[in-house]
Image (tube, rainbow, N blue to C red):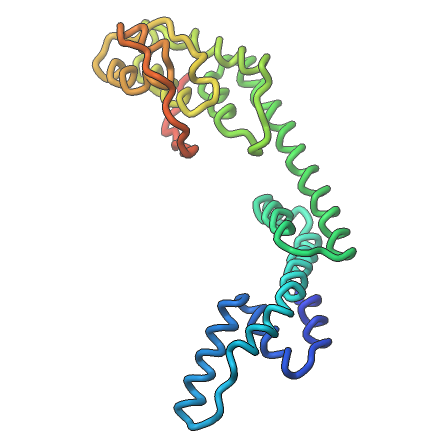
Length: 252
C-alpha cells in the first residue's frame, strides 16, 4: 500500500506533533495512549521525567482527522492503482470507509473514481448472474436456479417478480411425491435459503422417513409442507443471519 499521503502529512508537522502522528497512523488513539503509558513507565523506572498524557491526548485529537484522511487517501490511491486486481470486497470496504473520514477535494475525486469502478464491477456481476439464472430456468436446473436466487452478487440485487415466479413454479413442480427422495430433500434445503421459500408449493412428499423429517423441519419456511403433512401452518420464523450452506450434490 502506498504511503505517499501519510509521508506528506508527516513532513508538515512540528517535532512535538511528529511522534504523536506516527502513533496515530499505526493504530489511532489507542496506540497513542499505549505509547504514552509505556514511555512513562520506562521513564519512571529510569528516573527520567514523564510526559503529561492529557497534553499528548490533545495533540492527538487535533491531528486525528488529518491522519485518518491521509490513511484513507493512501488506501484509495492503492485501490485505484490496483484496478481490476483489487478484490471486490476490498474495493467496497474502501468506498464504505470514506463515510468515516472528513474528505477534502482530492479525496472526493478519489472516492468518485472508486465508486464508479465499484458500480461497473457490480453491474457486470449482476448481468452475469441474471444470464446464469435465465439459463438455469430455461434448462430446468432447479438446484442451480435456487442457488443463484440465494446468492445474488450484491446485497442490493433483487430477483424480479417475473423471474421469482418462474423459479417458484420450477421448484414447486420438482417437489412432487414421485421425485427421487434424495433430490427432493436437496431441493427443499436449497429452497429454504431463498427469499421465495414461502411461495413454493410442493405437490407431494416422497414416502420415506428422511423426506418426511425434512418436510417437518422446514414446514415453517415452506408453509405448503405443513399443509401436506396435515400440520397447522407455523408463523414465519424470525429473521436470521444468511448462512450459506455448502451443497454436496446437485439435483436435476
